[in-house]
View 1 (cartoon, one colour):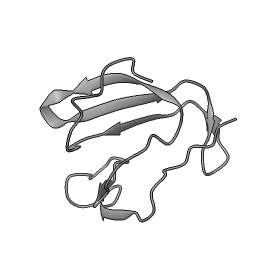
View 2 (spheres, one colour):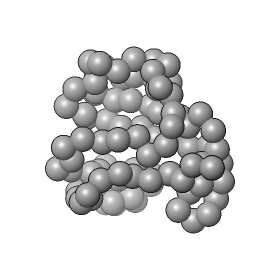
View 3 (tube, one colour):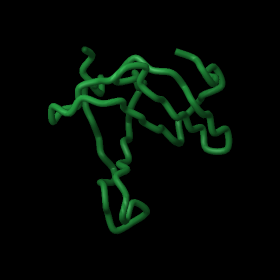
Length: 91
């Protein structure tokens, strides 16, 4: 079974979950200064949002979360520099 791993050397969080700014009441975080972002699991692009360079990625199989939970995972990235080479159903 795959473990969900955010594969980065250094993680700069510019806004936390439930912060007083735009994430009030949600579980989103803002990460900055990344040179690239590799998917934390084997997945497939389900949606693409061209107006905000966003990608919705769902795991193909259940993955193990950091807390030991085993379930499917979905992540969404927004404000990426370039998503022109990505498309729906790309694995």
